[in-house]
Figure 1 (spheres, rainbow, N blue to C red):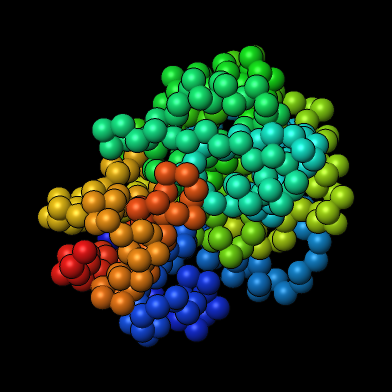
Figure 2 (figure 1 turned 135 degrees about the horizontal axis):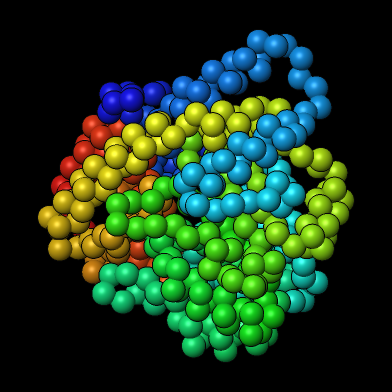
Length: 386
């Protein structure tokens, strides 16, 4: 697979895409949306073929792919991360947000404290509060252009918590946590008795020089308290096809999660999500490797842009296709920046403030788009006075 596959510009307007909905400012016909986290590339051909076969069959009944599905999931994580997963650990679910919310309800009670490390993917805070748990924030520290966990602050706040929501790799800071960092956070959670609910949806999107370590592999004898939430949707651009998995080694925890899962009236994935997952994990590696090469070139363009301006710094990405732009030198807040770039550069970026503490003055940019589109956007941003 060569670069031409990803160079193709696909018109998504009028397709029902949330990403291409009406922007808060600017000309809707001109604005390029780079805010929400889905890609502007067609998915892997193997997935499209699998979905076509499913449609061609013409009968869309209740679906359970059984061992075929679990074998595909296990094979992927064995090959990609050297992670050996027992098939009993796998709980197929519609999505990662659903998985996290279900785990919260299964393992904690109303009023229990749950820690998150902001700035972080904003549904984390919403899920804690919407489930009537107490939100506890340990703010990440930006040191020399790289985010770090404040372990002392985390340990202090863990005294009042029942669980920790880990974002690994980190969104929006694009950190790929090292094994040493994960071991330190697990040690604190073990000492305080916290469950770790680990969102690892971006774990396939890792840049050169970095290795994703599943939190459970850094947990030693505490692995049973780790609930890992994974999905092929970010990796293969199939977020509109709901498919995810909870990986839970502890039998009692699995039982509690499954019980909570069934109480919602949802009984698994739809047949398209299952078909897409099997195809992705069996045949999608060549596409993924080509995607990562393409994204890395796009990262270089954003880096060059940041180097050419005194107003914006790039937080050097280690993973994900989400760039975190430090715009604090402009003196403008996130909404002002978002509006400015919408109106003057025809690009829709994500206001960093929504990601919580430490997000003010930052913008998030999704670079999973054709190189030509990105270069035009960066040129427009370069010409915009801030």
